[in-house]
Image (tube, rainbow, N blue to C red; front, side, top):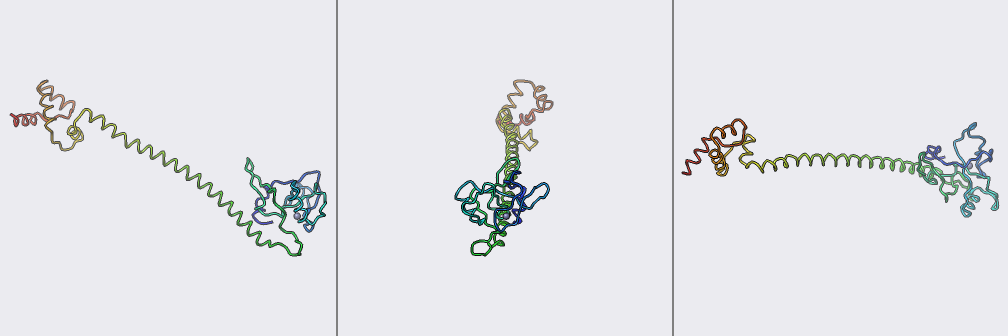
Length: 237
Ligand SMILES: [Zn+2]
Protein backbone atom coordinates (compact mmCIF):
# COMPACT_ATOMS: atom_id res chain seq x y z
CA UNK A 1 0.00 0.00 0.00
CA UNK A 2 1.30 3.46 -0.80
CA UNK A 3 2.27 5.74 2.09
CA UNK A 4 -0.55 8.18 1.23
CA UNK A 5 -3.27 5.51 1.30
CA UNK A 6 -1.84 3.80 4.40
CA UNK A 7 -2.00 7.16 6.14
CA UNK A 8 -5.72 7.45 5.21
CA UNK A 9 -6.65 3.83 6.06
CA UNK A 10 -8.67 4.87 9.11
CA UNK A 11 -10.88 7.04 6.88
CA UNK A 12 -11.60 4.31 4.33
CA UNK A 13 -15.16 3.04 4.40
CA UNK A 14 -14.86 -0.75 4.67
CA UNK A 15 -17.27 -3.50 3.49
CA UNK A 16 -16.26 -6.08 6.11
CA UNK A 17 -19.20 -7.90 7.69
CA UNK A 18 -19.10 -10.37 10.60
CA UNK A 19 -21.00 -13.06 8.74
CA UNK A 20 -18.37 -13.29 6.04
CA UNK A 21 -15.47 -13.97 8.45
CA UNK A 22 -12.98 -15.45 7.75
CA UNK A 23 -12.13 -14.81 4.09
CA UNK A 24 -9.23 -14.19 1.71
CA UNK A 25 -8.77 -11.33 -0.77
CA UNK A 26 -10.45 -12.30 -4.08
CA UNK A 27 -7.31 -11.40 -6.06
CA UNK A 28 -5.93 -14.85 -6.74
CA UNK A 29 -2.30 -13.92 -6.14
CA UNK A 30 -2.96 -11.86 -2.97
CA UNK A 31 -2.34 -13.60 0.39
CA UNK A 32 -4.27 -11.05 2.50
CA UNK A 33 -6.94 -12.58 4.72
CA UNK A 34 -9.42 -11.29 7.27
CA UNK A 35 -10.29 -13.11 10.51
CA UNK A 36 -11.36 -10.62 13.13
CA UNK A 37 -10.16 -7.02 13.17
CA UNK A 38 -10.28 -6.77 16.98
CA UNK A 39 -8.06 -9.79 17.50
CA UNK A 40 -5.86 -9.42 14.46
CA UNK A 41 -5.63 -5.79 13.25
CA UNK A 42 -4.47 -5.53 9.65
CA UNK A 43 -2.87 -2.83 7.59
CA UNK A 44 -5.56 -3.17 4.96
CA UNK A 45 -9.35 -3.23 4.59
CA UNK A 46 -11.76 -4.94 2.20
CA UNK A 47 -14.29 -3.84 -0.38
CA UNK A 48 -17.30 -5.69 -1.80
CA UNK A 49 -17.56 -6.21 -5.54
CA UNK A 50 -19.43 -3.35 -7.25
CA UNK A 51 -23.12 -3.65 -8.23
CA UNK A 52 -22.47 -2.22 -11.70
CA UNK A 53 -22.28 -5.28 -13.99
CA UNK A 54 -19.67 -3.87 -16.36
CA UNK A 55 -17.34 -2.74 -13.55
CA UNK A 56 -17.97 -5.99 -11.66
CA UNK A 57 -16.80 -7.95 -14.74
CA UNK A 58 -13.60 -5.87 -14.78
CA UNK A 59 -13.04 -6.80 -11.09
CA UNK A 60 -13.64 -10.48 -11.91
CA UNK A 61 -11.10 -10.22 -14.72
CA UNK A 62 -8.49 -8.51 -12.51
CA UNK A 63 -9.02 -11.12 -9.76
CA UNK A 64 -8.49 -13.88 -12.34
CA UNK A 65 -11.87 -15.48 -11.44
CA UNK A 66 -14.25 -17.49 -13.61
CA UNK A 67 -16.50 -15.19 -15.66
CA UNK A 68 -19.64 -16.57 -13.99
CA UNK A 69 -18.15 -16.53 -10.46
CA UNK A 70 -20.54 -15.74 -7.59
CA UNK A 71 -18.99 -12.60 -6.14
CA UNK A 72 -21.66 -11.84 -3.54
CA UNK A 73 -19.44 -12.82 -0.62
CA UNK A 74 -16.10 -12.01 -2.23
CA UNK A 75 -14.03 -8.99 -1.30
CA UNK A 76 -10.90 -7.25 -2.57
CA UNK A 77 -8.39 -5.68 -0.20
CA UNK A 78 -7.17 -2.07 -0.24
CA UNK A 79 -3.70 -3.22 -1.38
CA UNK A 80 -5.04 -3.15 -4.96
CA UNK A 81 -6.20 0.46 -4.99
CA UNK A 82 -4.54 3.88 -5.05
CA UNK A 83 -5.44 7.04 -3.20
CA UNK A 84 -6.96 8.39 -6.42
CA UNK A 85 -9.48 5.50 -6.43
CA UNK A 86 -11.25 7.04 -3.44
CA UNK A 87 -13.54 10.01 -3.06
CA UNK A 88 -13.75 12.07 0.09
CA UNK A 89 -17.16 12.12 1.77
CA UNK A 90 -17.55 15.11 4.08
CA UNK A 91 -19.32 14.68 7.40
CA UNK A 92 -18.76 14.86 11.15
CA UNK A 93 -16.13 12.17 10.54
CA UNK A 94 -14.86 12.52 6.93
CA UNK A 95 -14.60 9.20 5.07
CA UNK A 96 -12.89 7.91 1.96
CA UNK A 97 -15.28 5.90 -0.21
CA UNK A 98 -14.14 3.72 -3.07
CA UNK A 99 -15.22 5.36 -6.33
CA UNK A 100 -18.01 3.41 -8.06
CA UNK A 101 -15.92 3.06 -11.23
CA UNK A 102 -12.63 2.08 -9.51
CA UNK A 103 -11.11 -1.23 -10.55
CA UNK A 104 -8.36 -3.14 -8.67
CA UNK A 105 -5.05 -2.40 -10.42
CA UNK A 106 -2.21 -2.51 -7.90
CA UNK A 107 -0.18 -5.58 -6.95
CA UNK A 108 -1.93 -7.69 -9.56
CA UNK A 109 -0.13 -10.09 -11.90
CA UNK A 110 -1.49 -9.13 -15.29
CA UNK A 111 -1.98 -11.46 -18.28
CA UNK A 112 1.46 -11.10 -19.79
CA UNK A 113 3.00 -12.00 -16.44
CA UNK A 114 4.53 -8.61 -15.65
CA UNK A 115 3.56 -6.52 -12.61
CA UNK A 116 2.29 -2.95 -12.89
CA UNK A 117 4.78 -0.18 -12.24
CA UNK A 118 4.15 0.10 -8.49
CA UNK A 119 6.94 2.66 -8.01
CA UNK A 120 5.20 4.99 -10.44
CA UNK A 121 1.80 4.34 -8.83
CA UNK A 122 3.25 5.03 -5.36
CA UNK A 123 4.81 8.24 -6.63
CA UNK A 124 1.45 9.23 -8.10
CA UNK A 125 -0.27 8.50 -4.76
CA UNK A 126 2.33 10.54 -2.84
CA UNK A 127 1.79 13.47 -5.21
CA UNK A 128 -1.97 13.16 -4.79
CA UNK A 129 -1.54 13.23 -1.01
CA UNK A 130 0.63 16.31 -1.30
CA UNK A 131 -2.00 18.01 -3.48
CA UNK A 132 -4.70 17.23 -0.89
CA UNK A 133 -2.55 18.75 1.89
CA UNK A 134 -1.85 21.83 -0.23
CA UNK A 135 -5.57 22.19 -0.99
CA UNK A 136 -6.29 22.13 2.75
CA UNK A 137 -3.57 24.73 3.38
CA UNK A 138 -5.00 26.97 0.62
CA UNK A 139 -8.49 26.59 2.10
CA UNK A 140 -7.25 27.56 5.60
CA UNK A 141 -5.16 30.47 4.25
CA UNK A 142 -8.14 31.76 2.25
CA UNK A 143 -10.35 31.65 5.35
CA UNK A 144 -7.70 33.51 7.36
CA UNK A 145 -7.35 36.07 4.57
CA UNK A 146 -11.10 36.58 4.48
CA UNK A 147 -11.22 37.12 8.27
CA UNK A 148 -8.36 39.65 8.05
CA UNK A 149 -10.07 41.45 5.15
CA UNK A 150 -13.21 41.72 7.24
CA UNK A 151 -11.22 43.12 10.21
CA UNK A 152 -9.50 45.62 7.90
CA UNK A 153 -12.82 46.74 6.50
CA UNK A 154 -14.18 47.30 10.05
CA UNK A 155 -11.07 49.33 10.98
CA UNK A 156 -11.33 51.39 7.76
CA UNK A 157 -14.97 52.12 8.49
CA UNK A 158 -14.10 53.25 12.06
CA UNK A 159 -11.28 55.49 10.78
CA UNK A 160 -13.60 57.03 8.18
CA UNK A 161 -16.23 57.68 10.85
CA UNK A 162 -13.65 59.28 13.17
CA UNK A 163 -12.30 61.45 10.32
CA UNK A 164 -15.78 62.71 9.52
CA UNK A 165 -16.58 63.58 13.14
CA UNK A 166 -14.37 66.74 13.40
CA UNK A 167 -15.73 67.91 10.03
CA UNK A 168 -19.29 67.55 11.30
CA UNK A 169 -18.38 69.52 14.46
CA UNK A 170 -16.64 72.21 12.39
CA UNK A 171 -19.70 72.49 10.18
CA UNK A 172 -21.84 73.24 13.28
CA UNK A 173 -19.34 75.87 14.56
CA UNK A 174 -19.22 77.70 11.19
CA UNK A 175 -22.98 78.27 11.46
CA UNK A 176 -22.32 80.32 14.63
CA UNK A 177 -18.87 81.89 14.19
CA UNK A 178 -16.98 83.45 11.28
CA UNK A 179 -13.74 81.98 9.96
CA UNK A 180 -11.75 84.71 11.79
CA UNK A 181 -13.54 83.95 15.06
CA UNK A 182 -12.78 80.21 14.64
CA UNK A 183 -9.10 81.11 14.07
CA UNK A 184 -9.20 83.19 17.24
CA UNK A 185 -10.73 80.27 19.20
CA UNK A 186 -7.92 78.05 17.90
CA UNK A 187 -5.40 80.50 19.37
CA UNK A 188 -4.04 81.54 15.95
CA UNK A 189 -2.95 85.05 14.99
CA UNK A 190 -6.15 86.91 14.04
CA UNK A 191 -6.79 89.69 11.56
CA UNK A 192 -10.37 90.78 12.15
CA UNK A 193 -12.41 91.39 9.02
CA UNK A 194 -14.69 94.38 8.43
CA UNK A 195 -17.71 92.14 9.07
CA UNK A 196 -16.28 90.98 12.43
CA UNK A 197 -15.49 94.53 13.48
CA UNK A 198 -18.91 95.81 12.33
CA UNK A 199 -20.60 93.03 14.35
CA UNK A 200 -18.45 93.93 17.41
CA UNK A 201 -19.24 97.62 17.01
CA UNK A 202 -23.00 96.84 16.85
CA UNK A 203 -22.76 94.57 19.89
CA UNK A 204 -20.87 97.24 21.83
CA UNK A 205 -23.49 99.91 21.07
CA UNK A 206 -26.63 97.76 21.35
CA UNK A 207 -25.48 96.69 24.81
CA UNK A 208 -23.06 98.39 27.18
CA UNK A 209 -19.27 98.47 27.43
CA UNK A 210 -19.56 96.35 30.58
CA UNK A 211 -21.64 93.72 28.78
CA UNK A 212 -19.15 93.63 25.85
CA UNK A 213 -16.20 93.10 28.22
CA UNK A 214 -18.15 90.46 30.15
CA UNK A 215 -18.83 88.54 26.92
CA UNK A 216 -15.24 88.84 25.72
CA UNK A 217 -13.21 88.45 28.91
CA UNK A 218 -15.42 86.34 31.18
CA UNK A 219 -17.37 84.18 28.72
CA UNK A 220 -14.36 84.09 26.30
CA UNK A 221 -16.49 84.92 23.26
CA UNK A 222 -14.29 85.42 20.17
CA UNK A 223 -14.59 89.21 19.89
CA UNK A 224 -12.00 91.85 18.95
CA UNK A 225 -10.54 94.05 21.70
CA UNK A 226 -12.53 97.30 22.24
CA UNK A 227 -9.46 99.37 21.28
CA UNK A 228 -9.38 97.54 17.98
CA UNK A 229 -13.09 98.28 17.33
CA UNK A 230 -12.56 101.93 18.19
CA UNK A 231 -9.55 102.28 15.86
CA UNK A 232 -11.54 100.63 13.06
CA UNK A 233 -14.47 102.99 13.61
CA UNK A 234 -12.17 106.04 13.77
CA UNK A 235 -10.77 105.18 10.32
CA UNK A 236 -14.25 105.11 8.90
CA UNK A 237 -15.32 108.47 10.28
ZN1 LIG B 1 -5.57 -8.32 -1.79
